[in-house]
Image (cartoon, rainbow, N blue to C red; front, top):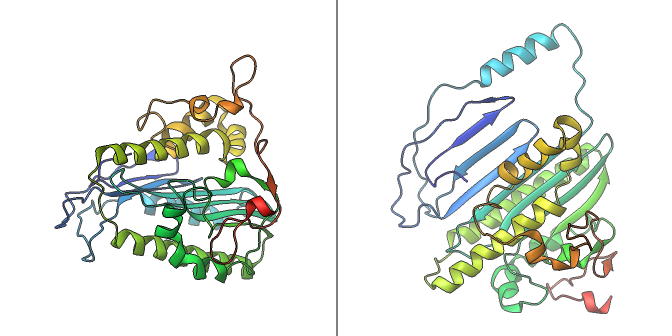
Length: 307
């Protein structure tokens, strides 16, 4: 995680970092939010102001994008470029621990013809058991979630071990590639991110030290789970760069914070995955009840125990 007033851009194989000047903001919590996105081309990170006034920032006018664009254009004029059949997008926006906001999550995996999608405002605290948190953030968003229930239907079985990190408005879906479906997905992405920004605009910083620590541990638990169990791009990265580099990229780049936000290990949080020899069971979706349909009703009530 870079500092609150820095912008870091990486493209292709090179590092062309650009650091910004201080963000112009009247907000005492101008470091309140940071976001991370990752694709096969790299990562962008940027600060997000909670203020209604758009922040100003200065960045270098120099960029390597035209270098990359030139090489692609020149190559395409001579040969046919065949795109990789596999694409992965991981995009997440985290609040600072002073805020218990949900984590914006877009986790898209696309093969030659199949798309596996998770789009959500991941709850910082388990909404299957914490009603107050669910009411605080998701009650007003249920119409948004219902808008896409039919357009992007439930994507098959998922176990309760993953469900604890999902909200009542989660879009968990699979579909074969088509322009229509991708247009719907883009519309949902825009709507969900705007909804997250609205929550951000009204967020109030926590002052209780114990609650701040609780929020930080919840973020660390989330990152630890994602890094170990829920990154669909990991197998692709392993094939491209090898297991050791793929693990390092996932933990220290894509899910940066696993090593800095807390000291607990995966097995500290999830002891049920411990094998007899003390290692982590590598199987996914192995614990808890499987849900073939959405385990929340239209009002956001958890009905998983009734299914």
